[in-house]
Length: 157
Image 1: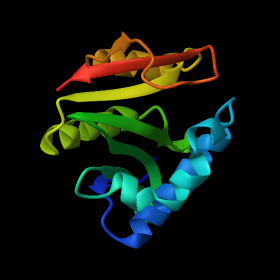
Image 2 (image 1 turned 45 degrees about the horizontal axis):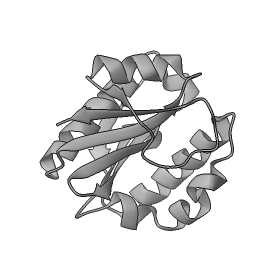
Image 3 (image 1 turned 60 degrees about the vertical axis):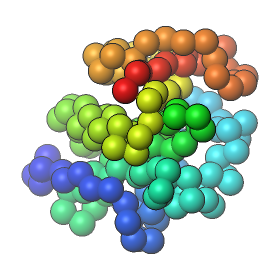
């Protein structure tokens, strides 16, 4: 990795477009189809869901290239949800996921949320270990998911 990636919060349309591109790469990398989550609609409303005042899209850039992302959005009643945390394969193994998660937790706190939730797959053992290292704990499902290996986690902020 030549350039040390820099983290930022999306503000301009170009940033949200970069986030959409990374979201699509993330979805393509999964062994499941995200249609049950309304993924196409989510792509059309990225700025609404992950922008101010109730959300944030954390992006990592190496130079001008977006190489990682994590979204924080409202789930109502003081609860935020972490979605679409992704790092491009060639930038993995350099703690970028940890930095994205750390910034996302900070942003959720700054936005006034009391809890941060997420869902992951049992097969994503590295991601699950990372979440656990940040204090996330397994909780009952908070939405319907047709995939039996879905795991739901929450961190008190």
